Every structure is written in C-alpha cells, then in structure tokens.
Image (cartoon, rainbow, N blue to C red; front, side, top):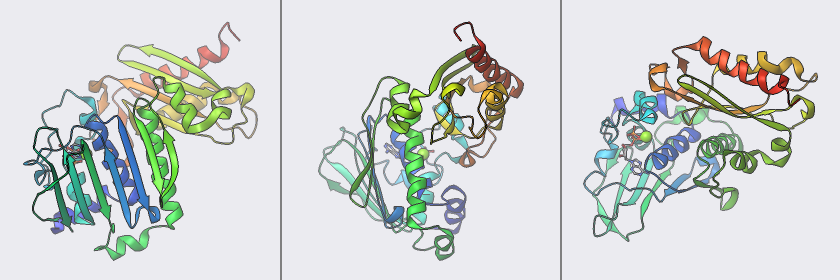
Length: 323
Ligand code: ADP
Ligand code: MG
C-alpha cells in the first residue's frame, strides 16, 4: 500500500477491534440480517466477517479498496452515512494496506461470486467463486508490515475483549440482526435476531441487569430518548454499562453522561454507578458532523436541549406518580 493509505490506516485502524467495527458497519450498511465475526488470536492472525447482505458487484470489487471510492456518497439523506462521512471510502483501503485481505462476495446479479485477494493493499485479479449470497472478508496478519503498531498492541485476550465489546455495541444498536462472535473456534457470543431492543439488552447484559433497570422514554422536537437505566432501588448490578447510541452509532457523550448523573445519581446508594443503555434519535441537522468519528465522540448542535431532555426524562420516571 502507498504511504498515504498507511498513514490513514493508522488513524482509522488502531487495533483489531477497529477492523471489526468497520467491517461490521459495512455489513450493516449492506442490509445484512446475519453477521458472523470469527477471530483468531485476538484478531491478530485472522478476522473474518461474513454477512448475508447485498454483496459487492464484480466490477466494483477492486474499487471498494481504492481510497474514497465509496458507493455511499450519494446517500447523504441517510444519517448513518452523515455520521461516517469523515471516513467515507477509507475503511477498506486502510485495512487492506496493513494486512492480507481475501474477499468473496456475491450480489445475485452475476453468474458467480467474485473473489479478490490483496497483500498490503496491492490487489490481485478478480476470480470466480461459488455463489453464496453476501460478503465474506478475511483480514489476516494485521499490521504485518507495521511492526511499530503491532508492538503497541496489548495481550491477545485484551485485544479480544475490545473486539467483543465492539460486537456487543453493534448488536445493541441492531436488535433485528443476528450476531455471532467466534474466537479460536469457540462460540463466544450468539445473539439471534429479536424484535425488541429490551430483548437484545437481555441477551447482551443478562437477566440480572435487565431485572434491575427501568425503561425510559422521552421526546422533544427533533429528539427521542429511550432505553433502560438502573433502578436505584435495585442497583446492585455487577456490570455497569454506560452505553449511549445516537442514531444507532455507539458514541461517548459527556452531555448524556452528565444528564444521567445529575438526573438521578443522587438516588443511588453509595458505591453504585449510574448504569444505562440509552438510544437517542436526533435530527441530522442537530448534529455536528465535523467531529472525528473514529473517536466515537459526538457534538450536538443544541447541547442544552439534549441535557434537558435526558435529565427531565429520568426525573419524570424516578419521581413520577407511579413510584
Ligand atoms: P464506506 O463504508 O465509507 O463507503 P468502506 O471502505 O468501508 O467505505 O467500504 C467501501 C465500499 O465497499 C462501500 O461503500 C460498499 O460499497 C462496499 N462494501 C464494503 N463492505 C461491504 C459489505 N460487507 N457488503 C456490501 N458492500 C460492501
Ligand atoms: Mg465503511
């Protein structure tokens, strides 16, 4: 791969979990209903993502690995793409430039599936493969040509836990998609599709967590917030997620964190952390898209209104007439 690709790769692809996140997002963008993530050695020897999505056309396949050759540029009505705009068309070229990639993909429109391999971003020629709907991407020997980057990585078990977290976050955002995660041949996560967000939270965090939470829902013009927060009365959950999704993207939002904390943390017993899984739907024009998307930070155009909505929603739930 060229130097530009490898520099870009360093920004987008910090560790194996970043590869998983990008590949899973592509599968979701392709409308997949089933996504399987198989990794070996914490993702260092192999990351394989298989989906049943729309596939990549035979002629488009080499283009998908060229910088900024995204097929998603046209769909700027779609908030999903607005939020990934900073890296439009950069994930696959970046990943390919620092690994050995093999892709098999089938759209249903060609006679056979198309297969392509790349080594350090240098593509071979497209060949035929048996027609299995969807896309399978193998990313082998990540950072094989970046010894400095490789040295910075943590133990395989730590890298795997980042991968597992990335899959869980995607799964929480997309309950209707079946997710599987396999590590060194062993099933680690298996979340069949469900229709209710609450059922997915149950799959990910378990009955103890869900049993000690309360559902919340609040609306304001241009905003909806829904999800679960720990009920101060039963706050004893061992796991303490503080998950926030904005338009289905996992993000870290200090505004939401402070609104939750201020909203009901004073009700929590000593030693209990505010614990929540919150989904925000925000009008696209109320988001600042100039924030580095890989850092999972987000800026709201109207921070005060978000804060107010979340804080008020929790206050209503925890001091309402039903309690
Ligand atoms: P972006 O997602 O920003 O468009 P990527 O580098 O992640 O850029 O992907 C490049 C292109 O490859 C996508 O626009 C899409 O057309 C295609 N693509 C990648 N992964 C898949 C997939 N799993 N299924 C179908 N198309 C895919
Ligand atoms: Mg992408």
